[in-house]
Length: 472
Image 1: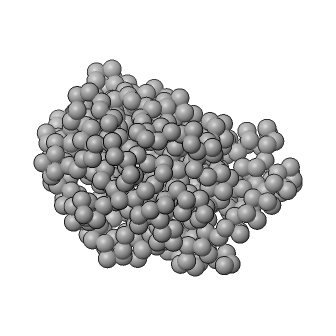
Image 2: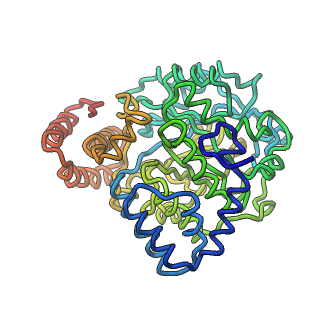
């Protein structure tokens, strides 16, 4: 099959021959400083670079080039996202699964992991626990099991989550990370009011993919890889992609994920809303030494920087799989969303002591949400609990047009500060609140539009009197 980014066939828009040719070309040109400088000059325009150009930057080992790649990533991140970091938490509904994925403890053959599925009452208790932390945005997760976890269960769970109003808490955006499904089912998810539909490819290498998914419906490479097209056909504007770094060679995966982004842009007029960059980590019944493609920290940081350069407008997510130290290093290089206070076990948020017996992966960053919020502010970032664009219908190409024009700062900056103010008033520890109030007073003055700035300052003052949920 020939490479064709406009094709709707997985093996044509993620074409193995094209990837291998790119990697070979990158090796041959890794010291071609004239070509590399042309790519860097193109990157400075902050309109992206191609998968082939990204492969060359990744292969290049010239120290001065690596420094410039990171400098550009920082510059581009600042241009489009400023210092705002969106906060979220995963909510695991069920770990029943019929697939045989060799890297996941939920795989069907794992007989000693306790299988759990939350009832709607248990979901309510989990959501209240998350609201009491201060979360406003969730990503629900579930294994693939048509009997135990049918779509109807997911839809009912979404409705339950949105219905819970506890004290000043409310979940305002539910993102969904569930198995590939049909256009009809994606339409049902859209109608249920989801934010982003998230699905990780795990690996773009078809041969490796089929070996890593030996049994179950997820074995079908094409059906899984083409899921985002069906989601968009079903009316979902915002989709999130990602690979699990460590399953396959990272060079292959970087090219693959950028080809996927280019395909979505070519066919649907808008690329992915987010790209996630998880690395494989230990879990029940999973030994990371079984996978010999581990990505060292230095290369991981370079991958994050190159993705930011290649797709300037796309949000980037890093989870609590990574340590505090690693998360701190990559925040500046491109990350725009992080989780905080996460539990990756089913029913984990109501447990006073962390119980990882049903967890999908070991959490490296085990700090509370308040500790993460305080840490971010001490680093100069603005923790944001904003969901305004989703609630105002600024999704898909409408969100991207605001971002590309630079006007998004007049929405995102005040919204981030106002949702941070909500957090400080309702949930923060005293020291966190003190740091946050100082940050808000400084950052609100940086809102470019005078009218928006003055209105936001008025709203912030009204929030001292107990009013909530202001947004632009």
